[in-house]
Length: 388
Image (cartoon, rainbow, N blue to C red):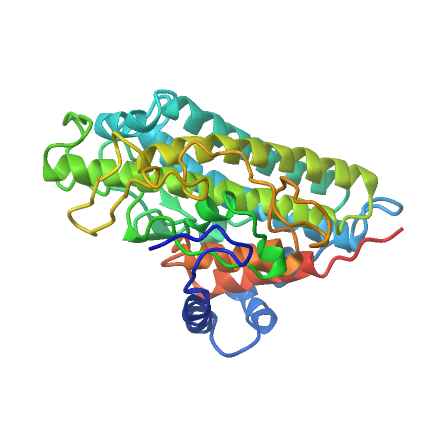
């Protein structure tokens, strides 16, 4: 794929991908409206009042209904983030139980395991704080436990009896962020971007010990098919880490613009700042997968290939160009500015986040009730309007 550093963005197959995602969305939630489906949750899982209700019981003169809706969606997002990070952490974190996976991650960055554990801790603190704050304001906390039904990794180091909210075994990782943050174009002005690396139906954690033996060596470059498989899994995880955290960076920034209450604004921008910090770290580590000596790794099972994106010498693909390149912002007549992007609701809001994570394969195997609940929360957050 050629990459053009132009104002219109890199070449993209976005229209076809959008149609495919829309078809997927219709299959998983059916033809009826999301909110009508959410009303069916009560008998089997969670009452819709506990999913979509915002501040019916909130304190007077405190956060508005819209503020509570934003906080509830963010609490749900942090619960989901915690779930996926706990899976990465138990296998590849500071005390990760899969030695070969830990080694493959360390090939990307020697501090990778510590970063994973730190990110896991942060997301858990966000989820706990947001739910506790909701309760303190007389509002309903978010509970996704009825949807904890998915089986995870069966490899050494994984808690094989535990059930999860998210699926890391067949991901379609959106790597367009790599090109977007190296471009002078902005998706909020209509720019679209292709994939820096094509990662489709790819595990980001080891699946089982037969596929990737837990005690094998992980040299750089890998020399056996199983070593290549494990390194490709780790490389895919690194790109997934960055994808998740750049999404959070846009989400918090976008929703902050819809907050009314100053204390809620403080919460949203303070937590959002850590999402940006996380993204900066993962932007750096993921880039190590597409420059020597790790560039060239190919997964023998899925065909996922990590090219040398550094060899062109262009800033639009350069591995160490990790700081957001100045781009168009607010008005194309103004000077370019280094920013988080996108930050318009249609691109960076709650519903956009749910659709992106669905396309990622993160919810593969989840029920229609789960999608209805997630959509009810997202639509309520996106409907929030800043007051004065």
